Image (cartoon, helix red, strand yellow):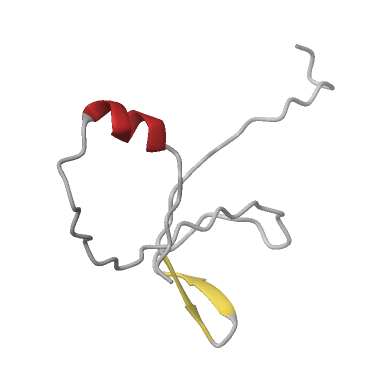
Length: 73
């Protein structure tokens, strides 16, 4: 690669942030240049209540349901 060629690199980093007053604020210093464009992936932690099952669930039944999302009504 010559000095005139530019190559994109992904520099992934996980940063804990807080959302308040319609702004996402990092809880630690981040090394960014003013005006730099970044991508943000939001991963939320939610509290769920365990459910009681009417019967013991087999491993095969679990494999069939893998990937499904269940939400309470």
